[in-house]
Image 1 (tube, one colour):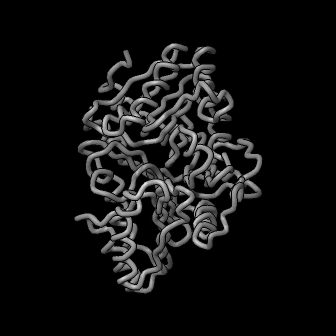
Image 2: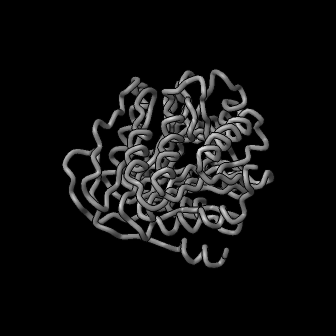
Length: 361
């Protein structure tokens, strides 16, 4: 199974795709590469190790966590700046968790010591995104932070998209955070109708924008055959019936009720009791309403945030299914709609995890 998955993931998709939410829809050639990490298959770090030295103009990095590790990414960033590439780095600072700030501080200091523009975000807002934009067009995003465990141990779902329109959206998003002008609701993408296939929908989120939830619910409500989910954190809030997280879980239940095969794979969160309790409660709610759920092994961290719908639509990025992630954080996601070949790679990833999962009860 692992060798078959490795073969499946050596995939580069060149397609003429429309881009929704950026004005007029026009179809142009776009290069898309799935970047999936499991034990024995580590694609995210390798892709960055190639992409950063190829940068010619700019590199923007927005990340929840970027630590100094034995891996050479930050050295490659310094080398890029040394040859004239404009580098900007934003890492999360937290007014509720000193450890988050402490882990990122050495990296900020290291970059500044090499003359690189690096700073913390607004500590009152959690930046949970994991976003890299190179030369304003190559976008690499998903679930991976820059630390040793994320690079080498955890199951992750990322993607690389080479397209100036997608790059433009996320560059503007980054620049607003950099300038401190990302006001609540400031990246609302408006009405995003999926009217062309294939299409890409960039989903930058900030406080109060709720872009991810709107796109995901639209796709879930269209599901006819299958919905496969890999999610690090999911919450059900019985006291808050109108929560966005509840809306997503209820959309899964509704899909299962109309005959769609719905399977949800959750991280055990064994290292974080609060998250473990939340995932367990969400799992019970789904199972009690007819949705199949499995957990990963407690010794493994499945950090992906991935949904695959009808074997053709994929939405992935940094967004977990809980209140802060859906409504308050800075998050970066993308929906890739109507590309079965790409969806198949992520479906293989899901199947690999599902077969090794354990039942909720």
